[in-house]
Length: 62
View: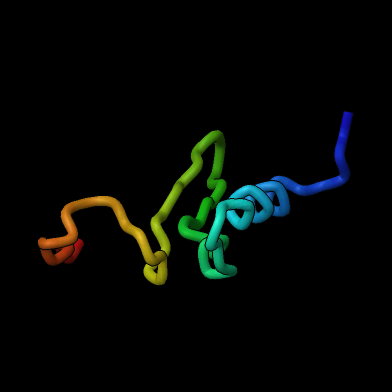
């Protein structure tokens, strides 16, 4: 059974349901790209407020 909401709408609703949630909490944090064949690339967005890794270290230039 479909509730008529897209996955993005469901994500946004869930993230904004918490007490004291603000619109910025629902901002996208990753970019997903489908490539040739069955390859999916997931990148952490540069403007993501929370990023994986040690916050005390500078990121390595690749």
